[in-house]
Length: 191
Image (tube, rainbow, N blue to C red; front, side, top):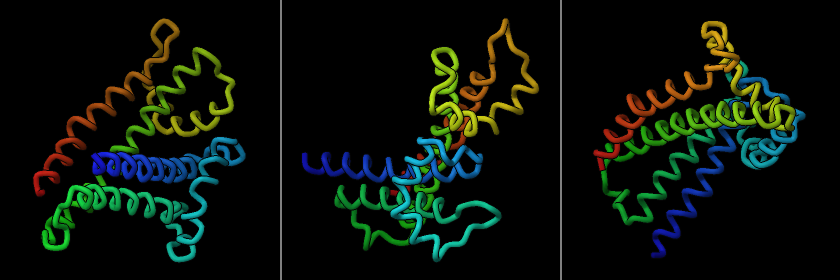
């Protein structure tokens, strides 16, 4: 019973921290408004870890690699911690397990990235019907623009309805089903 509680805490804390780090990374990549309260909250939550790492890990090509590296480390610690709580013999398991854990951390980042964009598109679509002038709208617009803008140029509206969010959902689910989940299952078979 205590193992389940520890697993829950580990997944919640490191999962939310990874989510915040990835959001920070993608908000910077998509040039979301920095002075928006949502952006400020994400920065405030992650600054304690990002600022010290930036001294050692420089940005590459305008990308905040320190934030992305921290997200990867958080996912790796999540994988290692999950096995440790289940009493998996990590120290005597061999190199294959460590390579699998590194791969699972990468798959976790990719999966979480897809979910970030998927839910941003969903939330933006819902808010466009309810209240398109909320405080989160500029952030969602910046996050979803790289996905939706090219599609909107190619897909006409149907009776005044924008179908591009539906296309994003279908593509995201296909990516999860065809690429991410099988890769994750292959890596988990190494345990």
